[in-house]
Image (cartoon, rainbow over all chains, first blue to last red; front, side):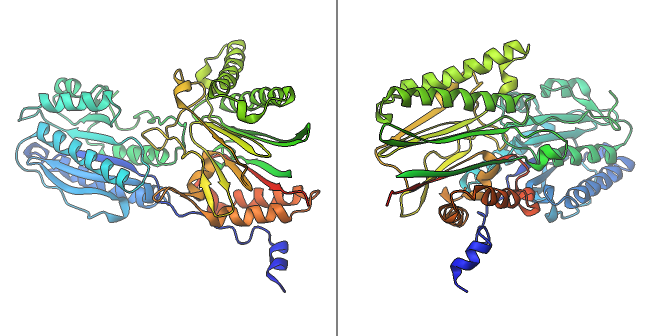
Length: 224
Length: 256
C-alpha cells in the first residue's frame, strides 16, 4: 500500500499542530503577616491559601496558565516568585513584625514588571496581571509613593490592583491607594475569598482575544 | 491557472457550551473575468465580549466582497489598487456596520470584529488585515506569514474595525506574484498553527491540508470539509483553543 493510498483514506491523518507555551495569567498576592494577624487570622489565611492552590491545581487549563507570586509583609519577603500552581511550596506564614505596606507594594510591582519582561522575551502572551493586597492594619511605612505607583500602573493598564481589608484594616488608606473600591473581608472568610479568586482566575485564563475579563461579584466573603 | 478553494467555520466550545452561535464569518470566491482568474478570500472574527460581533463580521465580509467585485468588474488591475482605496473599502464596511448598529439601537462597539483579506489574480496579490488572525502563503520553498497577528498588550486584546482609530491598524501589502497556496485563519487557530517563540508557520499543519485540497476531486469538497470540521472540533484541539475557528484554503492550479 503506497503512502498515497493511506493519504487518500485518511487525508488529514498527517496534520500536526504547533506547540506553543500557554498564555499566562499572573496574579500577585501581597499578604499582611504583621503581628496583629497572629492566632486565628493567620491560620485562616494559611488554610485559604492552601485551598486556593488546590483549586487551581485541579483545573487542567488554569494549572498551566495561572501564575501566582506571594509576597508577605511584616517584614517584606518574597515567599514565591511567579509560578504555576503545581509549584506550590505550601509555606506556613507566621505573624510577626509591623506593616510595611508601601515597600511591599513597590516590591510587588517590580516583580510584576520583571515577569512581564520575561514573558515578552520568551514570546509568551499573557493577560493583564492582577495584584491583590490583603491587610488587617494600617501602613507603618511611607505608602504615598506606592499609591502613586498603583495609580500609574492602573492608568497605563499595566496591572489591576485590588485591596481587601481584614478586621480593623484602615479602609481610608486603602481607598487612597487603589483606584477601585477596596473590599472588606467578612470576618475571617479567607477560604471563601480564595474560592472566589480561584474561580475568577480560572475564567480569566480561558478568555480569548476580544473577550472582556470581568470579576464575578464578591459575594460570600465581602461585607458589601 | 484556476483556483481551488475551501472554507469553513467551526464554533468554539466556549460558545457552543452556552448555546451561543459562532462569531466568525468568511466569504470566498473564485471567478473569471476577461481572461483572468481571481480568488477572493475574506474572514472576520466578531469580538467575544460583544453581543453582535458575529453580525459585524458578516456585514464586513459581505460589504467588502461587493466592493472588490465591483473593482474587478470595472476591469481595473489589482496592482492599481492603492492603499487609499483599501482604506476606503474598510471604511465602507465600518459605515455599513455603523448603519446596522444605529438601526438596532446599539453602539458600533457591540459589533466589533477583526478582518483579514486576500485578492489574488494571475500575477498579483493584495493582502490586508486589521487585528489578529493571519494569512499564510507558500511560494514553493516554505510557508510564510504576510502579517504577524496584531495583538494588543494582553492575550485577550486586539484591534477591531469598530475602533475609533481603526485606520491606523489596517495593514496592506501588495506582491507582484501569486503564491501557490494561500491560507487565511482567525485567531482561534493561530495558537495551534503558528509558533510564537520563533514567529514561524507550523508546516505540519498546512502541508497535509494543501495536499489534501489539491488531491481532492473537484466535486468532493464536502468530504474534505467534513473531515476538517471534525478535526478542528476534536477535544484535544478545543482544550488548546475553545474559540471559534475559521479556515480558508486556496491553491492555484496551473492549466495543463
